[in-house]
Length: 327
Ligand SMILES: NC(=O)c1ccc[n+]([C@@H]2O[C@H](COP(=O)([O-])OP(=O)(O)OC[C@H]3O[C@@H](n4cnc5c(N)ncnc54)[C@H](OP(=O)(O)O)[C@@H]3O)[C@@H](O)[C@H]2O)c1
Image (cartoon, rainbow, N blue to C red; front, side, top):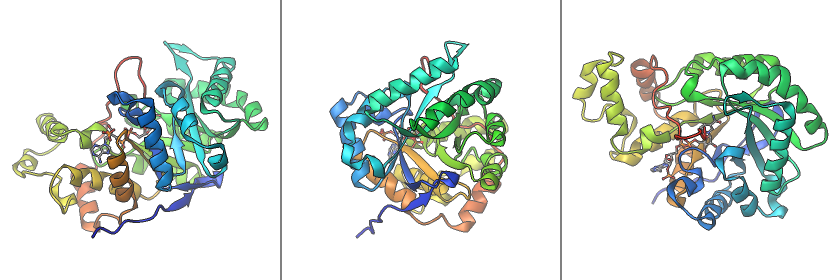
């Protein structure tokens, strides 16, 4: 019989908040199932299942279209034990938003969430060319909202598809204004290990991990096609493809679930990672993903091989949903 593990909790960096190590991501391609045609009631059930499994960290955003679902799913009596994160864009249709527009966006989020306060309010998908606007104009204007108790902590997320080298986050961390950052890291995109985690660990800034699995590890055929393209571009040796399962060394059990399990375990145990976000609209996936995140680290030998074979790759598998981007 499989050993079912109970949720584990950690401290979210210098915020001091106690959070589950597995966080429910309400965006990505799934958006709690909304991206796959599920009903609102089915998405509410996904949130409830996460809470019942001990998840107390939920990440949503103005432009995911899931804030109202989160608001509907949460009972007022359980609000205080939950840590809710939402986000706003600081650039819309190519135009920088003003502080007043960002504050209005926050107020809209609170209304949809049916809450008076959000624990972490992120500036969403901030690109290197707009990070100064975030630091100099937007974040200072949000201080009043913090003082009024509508925001617990400020956060910032990078735009992984457009910022493969994590250029925005070091500036944001250095500003001292953000207590939380959201960063992309996975088996084939490991460079946050050198570029971000040393900075967050030194400053106590908390890290939320995105893109642990995304489509590259969850969609059948996508990983193999990606590896073939990398070989063609000369970024991986052709000999890798002689192996029927080039990442098989990470997965003691064969089959598609093996690599998803390995990818979540890989992300969870990376030093410097606080919360691994997982996005799903499927309650079965939710339970297996939580168990993967709670599982033991991958063997040291497999970790060393993953770094040796793939540590040089940058920007692999960082696809985003199309149209007016829901990052
Ligand atoms: N810039 C940003 O701020 C930004 C960008 C990206 C993501 N995020 C945040 O990070 C969160 C996590 O990212 P993500 O949504 O890409 O999550 P993810 O956990 O990396 O990938 C989830 C994808 O894999 C599928 N999947 C998950 N478990 C599976 C399983 N056991 N078997 C088969 N398929 C499985 C899901 O589809 P199913 O629905 O079928 O399970 C979904 O399409 C987002 O929800 C969002 O909160 C933020």
